[in-house]
Image 1 (cartoon, rainbow, N blue to C red):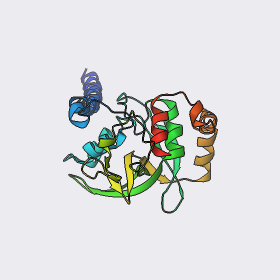
Image 2 (cartoon, helix red, strand yellow):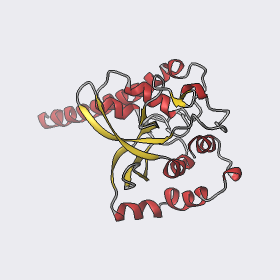
Image 3 (cartoon, one colour):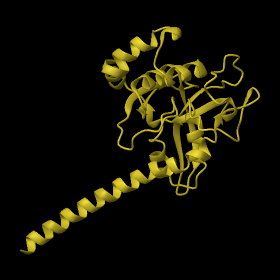
Image 4 (cartoon, rainbow, N blue to C red):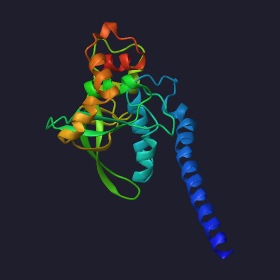
Length: 230
């Protein structure tokens, strides 16, 4: 009888902790949803991952909170992502060194993984959080504010002050626009690169997409991002 009670107690604790973890994760999502109007006053989130990133890193939060919040939006499209979404393993070049950096990317749809691999590069960033100072990789694109063909469906005022990046609205590093966090970023080895290249999405599909002329692409937000980032 005593053993059964101990067993049942253990099961209850495990279930309680699991529900607590799920509730905590859901709260990150609900908090972002509740703050939507503050992040996007005109409701236009097209390609506005940078606005999410700026909003999140400006919070007084722990590093863990920062990571969890950054799992919930797509840096390419600006769409919210389901809290239970699995990331895509991708690689990008580092701006300064041109080293290949592997990591996880949370996306709303598969073309976004291809677009971030082709049109973004990573940089290291350091920030003091509520509990710790941490260095991490971020996804960046070139300053788009001088573009004569700036995408009409993107709110230019979210990013730009004239031809300069608006530091009040976004995070910039060396005149590059930070669009999101690159999760678990680290230098790749050959095995990791080969695995990504042979994956159904990041290999076969992305090779097809990234070799398709822009005027022939038909996949919504990613196409807008490409016009912004190329």
